[in-house]
Image (cartoon, rainbow, N blue to C red; front, top):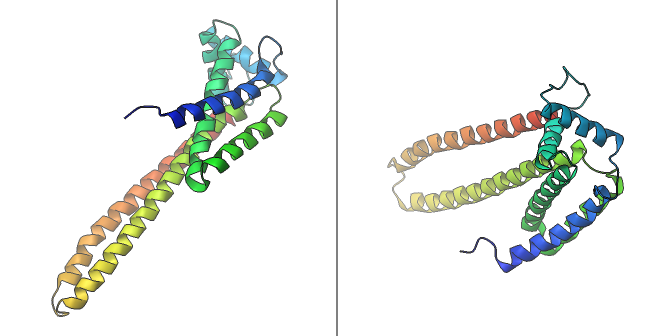
Amino acid sequence: GKLFNSHSLLLLLVLGLMVGLLMLQTNPLTTLPSRDSGFFMYAGKQILAGKLPYIDFWDSKGPGIFYINALGLLLGKGYRWGIWLLEYFFFMISSYLFYQSAAKRWGNGAALLSSAAWLFGLSRVWEGGNLTEEYSLFFSFILISYFLQLDAAQKRRLSGNAEEDNAESRNLQIADLQEHPKSANLESRIPKGIQYLERDLLRLSLLLGTTFALSFLFR
């Protein structure tokens, strides 16, 4: 099938316009960086010059924001446009992930309205952009989307198990109760349940590990 259908292209266009309106606040042609943003750019410039965070320069923030600014300056060849493009990319992916998560729960209309609402709310407190909060939103929405997928998979699995149990109960009522297929069936399902538990614990560990890593990088 097509990678992008007409609905997806229209969605990307609408989200792109909303993000573009937000990004007007940090247009390098018309605005100056805030104090925090300016230091992050300075840190990125120092990294490109071979300096190390917390040794050659210091700030209380985690290292993620410094290296993102270094990448932006590298892409922009020393100009803020590279950082601006990175911000736009982060916001576009964040908006798309948020929309998809909301649409699965409440429908396309509510998802589009809530996307516009959170972007507008952010525009009121953004303070010129290039801050740790906007980059961490990208990873936060990835985790939320992944969590919702796990939740949906768990519900499908429970629904499937319930159907299997109902079918098994009907079969056992017909079969001779003195036979042993019931116990054999239950024994065969115990290892399957253990596999589900191990997989859920692994996913939970990955989520917690990612959360702690992000809090270190962008705290």
